[in-house]
Image (cartoon, rainbow, N blue to C red; front, side):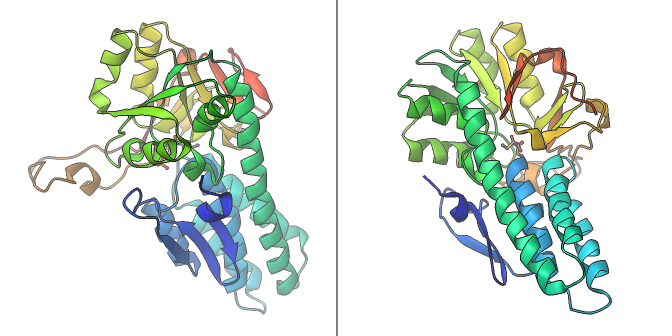
Length: 338
Ligand code: MRU
C-alpha cells in the first residue's frame, strides 16, 4: 500500500506529492518548489482530503520559511505565504490547523531564520506522523462498530491518499480487512471529480478489499434493496454541534441511510473538529469551477446554462449516529465547542 512518504513528503527544496489528479491512470509525483506551486497543487486537488491538506499546510509553512529571504522581512514574508496557503481551500479546517501548527513552531524558534527553517520542517514531519497515527486509532475504534462481512457504503475518498497515510473512513475498512473480517465496500463514483471511482477504488483494489463502484444516482436503490449494513464517511469540518461538512452528496447519503434505518458514521481526527464554528450554517462551502461539471464529455452542458458546483455539503448532526475519532466513539448529542 502507498506509504505516507509516497503520498506527501518534505524534501530540501520542495514538497513532493503523489499527483492525485493523475490517478489511477498513472502514479506520478509532482514537486512544489515554492508556495505558488503548492497553492496551485492544492487548488487543482493534486493533494486533497482534509487531513492530507493539514499535512500540506504544515509542510507549506516549512517551505515558505525555506524560500523567505534572510533579513528584516523574513517573518513578514513567512506569515504572508502562510496565509495564502491557509486560504487555498476554505472548507477543510485541517488546512488552517496545519498552517497554524507550522506557524506555532516558527513562533517558538526565535529570530534566526536557519533555526525557524529547521524547527518548521521538524514540526511538519511530526504533524504528518501524528495524522497517520490518529487514523490508525480511528480505524481500530471504527472497526468495532461493524460485524463480520459488513457491507459498507462510503463516498468520495477518505483513504490513505486523503490523509497522508492510513485513512479515516477507509481506515475503518482497512482495519476490518487486516483483522480478516471480510468487509465489502460500495463506492459511489462521486461526481464531478470522481474521487470514489478513481481514488477509493484504486486504494481498495490495491489492498485487496472487495468493492464495487456505482453511479451516484444508484445509491438509494442499494439501500432500498437492503444491500448496505452501515455507512462511514470522512469529514472536512465538524462544527461544535456535530454538523459535518464533507464531499457533496454526503448529506443525501445520510438522508437515505436514515430513511432505511442504516447507521451513518463520520470518521475523522480531532484536527477536523472546529470548536469555533458553532454549526453547519457557519461552515464556508467551496464553490468549484464550472468546467468540472460541464466536463468530461465536451458539450454536455449548453453554454447558456448556469452551473452550481459546491464541493461539499453539510450533514446535520441529527442524521449522524456516531463520530469516530482517534480518542473514541462520540455519540449524540455532540457538544464539541470550546
Ligand atoms: O474535494 P476533496 O477531494 O478534497 O474532498 C475530500 C472529502 O470530502 C473527504 O471525504 C474529506 O476530506 C475527508 S478525507 C479523510
